Image 1 (cartoon, rainbow, N blue to C red):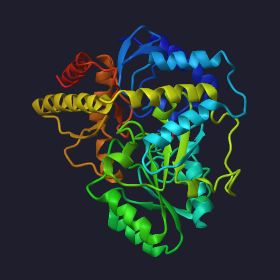
Image 2: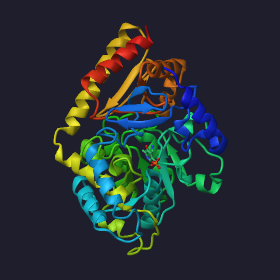
Image 3: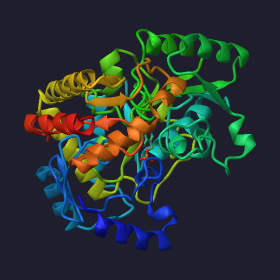
Image 4: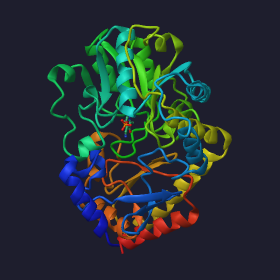
Length: 426
Ligand code: PMP
């Protein structure tokens, strides 16, 4: 495949945009080469500026669970746009999507919409601090909760891909309030809570980690966190930016049967437009301005186009009772196919999968936390990434990311992908 025009466009972009990209994970820095410029996308496919067609396993890093340019979402946005694109005043559709989201997600009474997952997590932590009148938070090494200061401490995703899990610019004052724990290690969390008695406002976690590759929680881990939080008067925040409306209708809370005190959303809830949200019980959420003392705001929050896309997406998910089953089956089929090929070719690997999230690590050892996730960051991954790309399959350009399966994928697409894996290692 040729990427002449993408290369030219990237060279132009580098002159006026730092690193040529508006979000670091888009750059091919860790795998080498130049990013691909998308012209358009439909269903499971991306069409780039050089005329190549790629099967997309990133899906805008999660939102496009029903595929690109999903017609009902596109129509809803177009219709809304005709009525004006932003007012900074309340609109009925905000209540409609809020009511639907609250009805789908367990254990939440109220939800507030923001413009990104970062904002959602940042605001949820502020709210937790205001509510508990405590300052510290516990986060897990390798989890990513957006780029706000408190979270850029041993962060996953692009932060680790580009070697800055602790970003310069985050003050020591901020960093000292973020306590780091090891994913899937309950004893470690217990120890941290016990050595900071009465000081930890919240534990924030990706209930399925997706930003150090896909790492599901081990049996009892989330339940254990719930008990520890109850014991210590600490709030449990599930960052469901990736898992919300993806792993189940009610997200990870529903899938694992564990209640969080606050839940954050992004990605799917916006149907591909810039949306984030955070939700919880009324007693906590009413701590927010204008009824409560914790301040949080946004000029474009609840934007009508974004709400139209998000509402339509949630309605489709609500309507299609077999969606999650189909997604699980497609992902399982893909896993089985890839597993078979890699075994035949005697390539050392580990596959982590849950629902429609999957990662292939090129190491035989189990991947359960940030340190073990590092096993997958190797030359074989680079070869795999470029090999797939050359064969028309696009996965995230880093081993610290998850593949997102979309319902638009057909079994032919999955077979095509498995065939591409075979070619890479032949
Ligand atoms: N939390 C999680 C779990 C995420 O995966 C992400 C983004 N990948 C974020 C928060 C931040 O979301 P955004 O990029 O929309 O700010």
